[in-house]
Length: 399
Image (tube, rainbow, N blue to C red; front, side, top):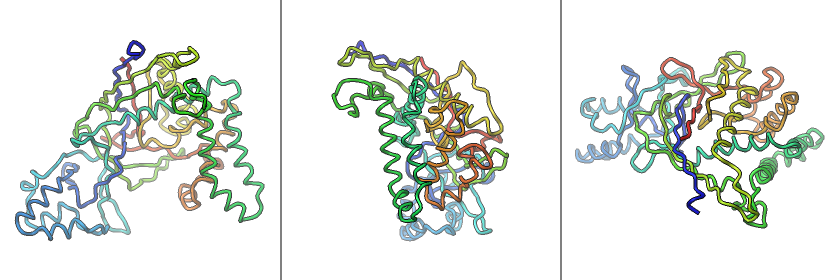
């Protein structure tokens, strides 16, 4: 069996800040922002608590730290008000990073400090990229690669398209409400059906949708090697429209800086299945799939915005966290260039019937087709070192 395992050492170079969330966030009670050098220090709360506890003032810090109000005093100001100097609290810093944009925002005319979404870290508090995140990127690319080879690929997506067309025929408000309530389950079932058709091509089990029949089950992607806190920065989210207008979203994320090198391993099990067929994906297939995915994204999405970019034929580009819906969907690949309007209509319907009305209207998805001719009509970007970047863009080298 071991002779069938092919190992590859891979390196991803961050081209646009990458955020992979831990599910946690840092409140203004947990970090210190220094506007002199535009830096953010993530503090060791345990050390701060220990200091106040040793002074017999534990309850004083407990009261402050448990204050979740937006108007609560930023930690740096609070410490100074307790006559604790910068030199004293320097020993309580876990790590320090630059901020792409000031985290001070206006809310109701007042300045306030935003929460910061944390990057995932290992037990030693070092950032890393989970293998599951990398494999999710490869899964999308390989799905597009497989769909491209199908002769009658629209047949797979037609049930979803027809499902949304039925809604326009409903007249009763009660029926419409029931339709929208059940819609996510219907979409999930159809997505599972499509993925089973694309990937479950092996014959280890008589049940087609059994996970052991998935060609992806023989593609093993490891977690990246630990990175350094020095590789982190804080980035603000911008939604950029095709007409050049941008909305500043008060969401701040810990991200890997452009230029960061991420090392990880891929193992491909090329053993035979029960019918004597090899596992379908080689490292060359993965390269082709990533190049095809980037071509589709560039041609169907990026071309509607400025700045555009050319797809370099010799570069293998991928898209990781926070890069938006377009880089995580396979819808566009079901339709030829001449049928782009159908892909556009289906994407807008997915937003219309799966998002609640408030979010759909806030994001103005009703303008996707009528005004911008692209769905979604916002490109997820940020600014680092006075340069605008797309979130999540990486270059991958396989060795």
